[in-house]
Each structure stands twice: as C-alpha cells, then as structure tokens.
Length: 293
Image (cartoon, rainbow, N blue to C red):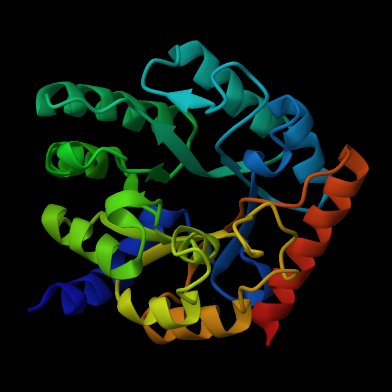
C-alpha cells in the first residue's frame, strides 16, 4: 500500500482523534471546525484576543502568538504552569483549543530535539488540544535532524493522542511537494500537513497559486490555516479580500481527502480591536458560506 492510500484509509479511523473532530459541534454539519488563532489579535494580550475570538462567535481557538517579549506563546521552555493558565483562560471563555503552534530551537543534536519536542507535546496535552503544529527549521543543515527528531517523537505523541503537523513555512517546506517530501521522511500515520494557502503565495512571491499547489497534497491534510495574500508580499489581509480563491482551494483539498478537520483563521488586516473583531466575525461567516456552498 502506498503512503497516500495508507493515509486515506487511516484517516477514516484516526483523523477524528487527531483533530478533535466532533460531529455534534462542527458548523453546518460539514465535518469542519472553524476557529481563530491568537495571531490575528497578537498586538494585544492573549486574554484580550480570546475575549475577541469568543465574541466573534468562535467555539475554537488556536494558540500561536501574542503581545509578549517571547511572541510565540508556547515553546518547549515555557513553564508548565503558564501553559495551564492559557488552557484555563480558554476554558473560562468556553473556547476549545484546537491547535497549538509550538516552537523549539533545533540544534544538530537529535537527542536534544527529541527532548524539546516531547516537552511541546506535553504542553499540548496540558492545553487539552489534539494538534501540535510545527514550523520546521529555516537552516538547511538542520533539515534532516529536525525531521528525525519528529520521527522519533511520533509514537510518544500518539500515546498522548496528539497529532503532529507541519505547514508550508518557507525554506525547505515552502510548497506542497516540499512538505510531502518532509512528511515522507517521517512516514508516520500521525504526522500530517496543516495546509496554508496564504503561505503558498507568500513564499513564492505570488507566483504559485494554492489552487494548483493543493493538488500535490492529496491524502496529507489534517487541518488548515485560513490565510489570505495580497501582492507583493502581505498576509495580514482580511479573509476573502486577497488573491486566495478559498472555494477552489477547499474544493481541491476535499477532492484529495480533506473532508473534516480544523479550519483556523490565522491572519487579519491590522486595526483597532473593534475593527479586528468585526473582521474575525466576517471571516467566520465567509468560511461558513464557503462550506455551505
């Protein structure tokens, strides 16, 4: 059985556990869970971001960045009590954490990478979150050690009911085929792709349309960052206002087997809090209209 067939078959039984899918709570009976990352509000404290996300009508939140010195909210060095507080703050607002973007500094030591990544997995469990999103390494020399560390952590993540994923994020993983290559290096059933159409445009300087690129990721996608793009190189764009053709991207991803899972708004055009909240509300409504169609 080739990897695509394996993933498509495995997805029927395991993707629900890895994505937090709950047929009772997804919008429109679609199988998709629509959420919003804190990054959309990261010029504010994350508590303010969570307030706005809840008020914009979301039931799901993604933990990514916030207005702090560290910027990225959860790293392997983040104290466990801080992670617990993040989870409690989400719970207070009746938000379920559906994705954690975790950051760790990879060195040439695979052993250290494994220790750091396991800490991120533990943090994800503390957040009661089924998905840990990784950004890869920008250093080509660390490409092989990075994904070896991921490979060695997949069994540990599976024991904790955590799915691991990467997104198109520049460097050696800037396109769908490049991400497929990296996922193939790991070749574990709980290591998936978190698609990001805005980044496909961004890292190709607008040359590669994600509608075309999406055909290269059949059988790999577990979730999606909802991000738009405006030339020459801007992703802080309201959803539906840029170059990404979300209906066509979704149609192509669904053809490739992505029929349920998280869809999490990552970026919006900058503005004051009322403007951002209104943009987040419109983004949620727009995504639901795409799913309904």
